[in-house]
Image (cartoon, rainbow, N blue to C red; front, side):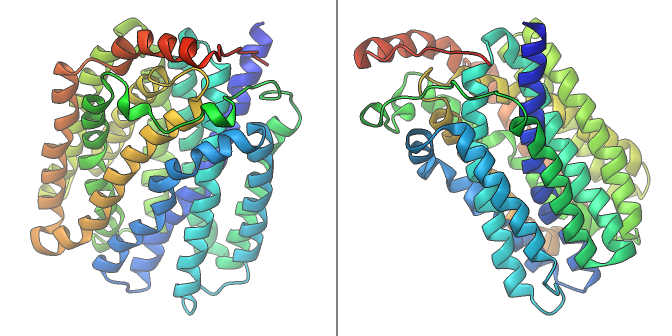
Length: 408
């Protein structure tokens, strides 16, 4: 049983790493590359809209959940992502910015759809007592992908250029596909019948107040993240320096933070973890403002913010998973994730405009203030698990679709 548990967690970690790879490259490495090419802050900030599929994926999540096995979706979309990375090697980013933008959008569409399938597998195969660890490893796996995509590939680009960087991304994506391909995880996951599937999560008791927590959870964080790399470039940091600072340092701290946060969600309880880690995350964002004002303490700000951000993300993801109905995990979880991404994308997209008027320190200060909204709301709004356990049982009874979880 322990081996099976480790196998499930390992497969999920690899799948989330596969999502983090291209997303990390396009959101972490590419802004630094564009700034070095002389692209304006407004345009760099506006590239956040290319992440729109992550915000809109809830629209097609029911289709994914009912039209084929989630495992089949995951493996098929992994293959498409690998092929897309190979094709990227043919581009010249300095002369094909429009084509590059379209490629980024398509890559996000494929990765977001793969995320629907992966989330569904996670909800179905992780027992409630495993979800703290599971979501900690989810965030950790994603951050491993972000480290590879946002830092390792940035260093490769700095040394070898675009084509070999894209080829390296394709190879890494292929490696992350092997754990699922070589295991039977997800083969027996069952979902609701097409007639029973509906986008009704928002009608459940406690869901709408919880949306307020989801909307505010990453609002301040992404306002800061949208301008973090341009700030470092303007401060005279080379691309390799940025890769070491944010990749080796920051994302490694985030990986550890996610595991620590996931391990503490159970002992602390869902609400207490959300409030504690949310407040600490806001304070860590304020350290960027201090570093921008003083010109020092950048390493301390990066390490603290990534560590505490990882803790906070593991906590909110665990609460999101608890809020899912048993036979509609992919759809319910995806809807909540889309709400987070919509707020995050809007915040990051507006960050360049604010930085042009307020300066980097002003944007970082505003981000820290906004980040306090989520823990303040979490103090007075119970997590959906409190409200939805009875409702979940009611839906199962009404639909006559008691969900059978067969853990691989």
